[in-house]
Length: 69
Image (cartoon, rainbow, N blue to C red):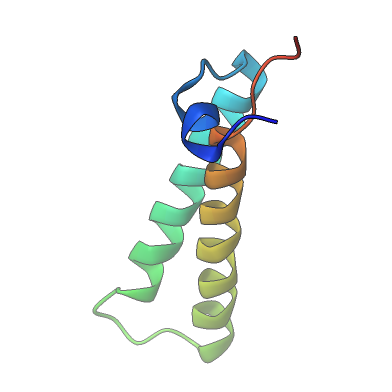
């Protein structure tokens, strides 16, 4: 079993690169909504918070994916 550092530094498969980028964009947009200087409904803020967490997790998990040996 590879160590986490080795997995992160290994080449990432094409599908997981796309998934990682989508997760990062999702987290960025959600963070922007949460930090918006305008008053938004509480439901929108709560959903944006969940999307930020989901995007961060998707990005982290995708980064550790490696091609099978």
